[in-house]
Image 1 (cartoon, rainbow, N blue to C red):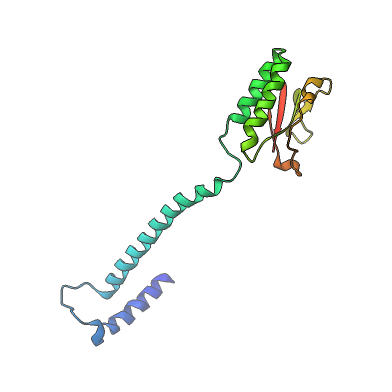
Image 2: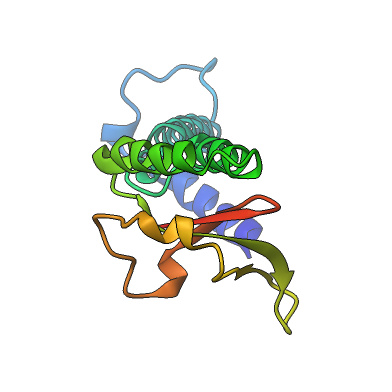
Amino acid sequence: KIGARAGRLSRVLRILRFLPFLTAGTDDTQTGIASLISGRLSNLLATRVACLTIILVMVIPLFDIWTFPQYDYSLETWVDRISALQEEGRLDDALVAMGRMESFFSRYSYYPWAACVGTPSMTADGDDDFDCDSSQTWVQAWSPSRSGPSRGASSTRVTTDTFMVAFN
């Protein structure tokens, strides 16, 4: 279909080249009108594709600025630190670290809202879960200043082998 259209267009352009306003400044060494149009279209298309590619490379990452950070290792670092303190039996230091963790995340839109001691487990669907041990009452002394999300899907859990913190 495209070839047939190009053939028809070239026939029309051959006829139009005899019109006075299209023949100004022509000589025998000039290329055909179809070649000229083809060259201009190729140049225009290449320019637009290059501009679109540059714009996409520059603009698309801007949409990720306001989302939950993909490479923020501070969540794991805080949970690992508190878990290590808890495993060493330094529960008072773990509570102090939990308070510091909360103040650290106070400047961000995401924050810790729940914590517990327990063990990792699996749900019936095969998803990762965490079973909290209610006998570990020391962690209940920490009361976060901000509440959890209204939807559970808006929360992410960071776990170790013995400790879990839920972030909004």
